[in-house]
Image (cartoon, rainbow, N blue to C red; front, side, top):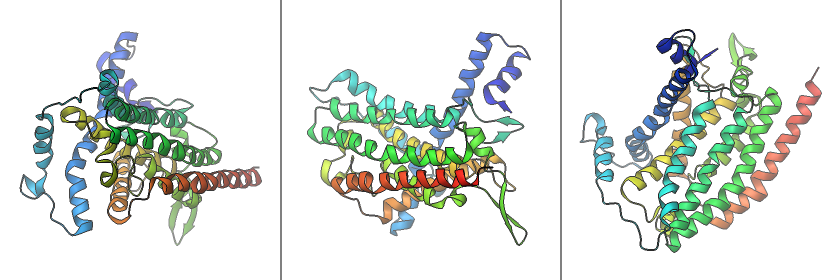
Length: 352
């Protein structure tokens, strides 16, 4: 398996690149990988409105460009040209750093996600033994960034939104990680490439149709738990209480405008796609799929998770903050540990 940085180093500098040349290749590969979630987040500006309009029987952007796609350019110009207003009394270092940390924590999570192969090169920056733990760890940095946004804004609504972020993510990160660990028990590894490889075998054949051993099929209960916890982790309905426009104006992002608002807004959607990448990797066979290239299947799967979050946004009412915490601690946490225990028992009984 040739990873992207190694392939770029060989292409640009030959078979024996120096340490400096490998560093240049790694930075180039990181930029190419980062373009994938950032491009998806840009397309969301248009896709979110189209999907929501379809769900709610409204008219989406349809004037600017084919099917209204140039609304992406128009919104980018509109938002970036607005004046950056910093509230009086803001904690400026934290105020400036928070939005950057939100985007950064999501983008670097894609470093260890296998996105399929292109001409024999695996679109993946690194494949450490602790890959899955790494993704969970860096994704959790968004909690710190959003809490900084709320605290530093010198606004009571923003502060409440930041506190809700911390309470919500603690309540739902634990079930998310515990459910992910049930997959680790099945696969016997934290390495993301090996988790994907473990799902390539055939589970059963029905009438000549091979059913793959995707963990969403092997353990659908864990798959549902992970999807629900992921909804809360990325702050989508019915778990969008940190923003809660009817209660907190816009929550932690109330005092942000111009490029800072763009960063916070973009960070939210990059996290949605990182959640989709995790779902695809540990439950849906990663980039595996028939006929189409693996990279295309990977994109299809992460966009399918995005469509699920948009359906939830349009169909499900927001729960109260006390209900959200109760669902997390008394519901998902208990069920995730029960699933982990059951998985361990089943794997132990089936082990040779």
